[in-house]
Image (tube, rainbow, N blue to C red):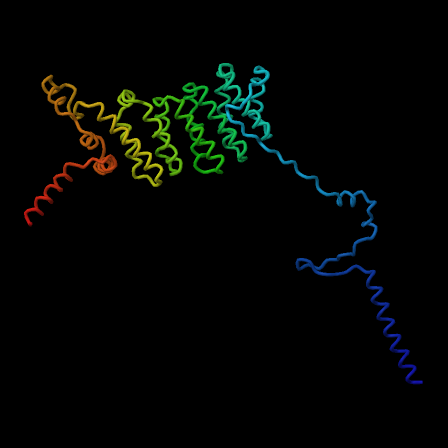
Length: 349
């Protein structure tokens, strides 16, 4: 009897436990999230119904994003516009668009107009070039590269007509050629090459010289390369008119620059200037005053100023020494030192 009662108690206890567990399944679960106690009810079976439009919308896969590829067309492969007047009226709005694809299309239209209708767009350059500069500042690389290609075509078409608008364009091209993605840098360098090819060096060099003192060494290096390409285009007479002393001083300042590109460009310029200087001899001594007598002028012409003396008269001692070292000119003191050393060594023998 006692054993049967014990069995009944055990079965009752287990049944109550099971019933408690079943009852607990219908209650919301209480737990902790982020250190705070909060109720987390089980999901309602009705909410999982696929017929619910919200659930059906959530289950739909996200639409695939369209991939837009920009085609970079070389200048010689550009086609003429169908209606130049219509494009001229819409090109400014396209350049100001917030849609980068529309901006690229407008930039390519600027290129077409520059090539096929440059006279028609000439009066719009004051508005077009600032918008091209704005595109060069665009964070999207495709817009930047297209703007660089547009700059090259503008230089090729309008030459000296844009010198008054050149400074902001030059600054951005130097910046893009020195610190951007590789394909953008290459496009910017091509634009700078076109600039030094088509813009008069007499007008371009005054714009370039301040860039040689830029705080950014990479910008200085790119400006030095442009400087080295522009100076030979002056020719002998152009260098004399511009002032060979100004050019020598500008090039000498780059010999001690941080980057080797600047130093190498400076060497190229100085060797060119040395050649021009020696071709232009005889020259009047720079220390000779303009009120010299005819006899003194004849003496000055009989004893032309050498490249060595010229550099020493126009540069500081250290700069002159650096320039003469680059142009392979041995100073008088160095020659005398070599002679003295040689004579003393021979006497010791």
